[in-house]
Image (cartoon, rainbow, N blue to C red; front, side, top):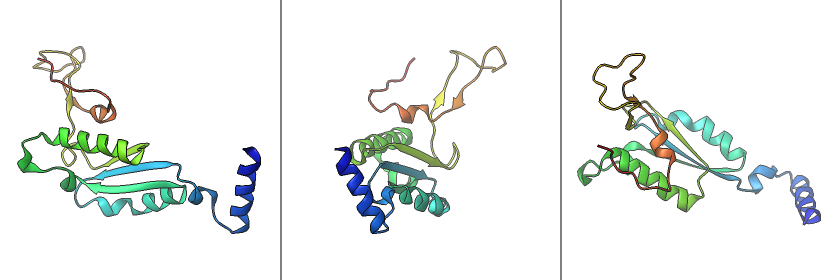
Length: 139
């Protein structure tokens, strides 16, 4: 096996083909706020030169407002489907918590007035990283 790999590297170098381009080492999904998708052009080219497959989508392409499904759930479903189809390694969000819907995480229950000892809710992308579970809202 090692001899085969060395032979492949030798052939690629003789043909002046970068090794990373010859081997797909994983995939990136870039979810950009509408209007910001062009800002990741250099990153996309860089990651592709490293051997990654890169897909850029906008929130408008993912979120269907008339579906009745919360925007955060639609994004989560899209990432989960991409994870299965593209053998996804990385997800990059380009935007803020307003332009890319982020769920709120609560560090403590029933906090009306956040303080140092009782933190209030925060926006987090943690929800999007856990793909092999079913979420339910705690009451």
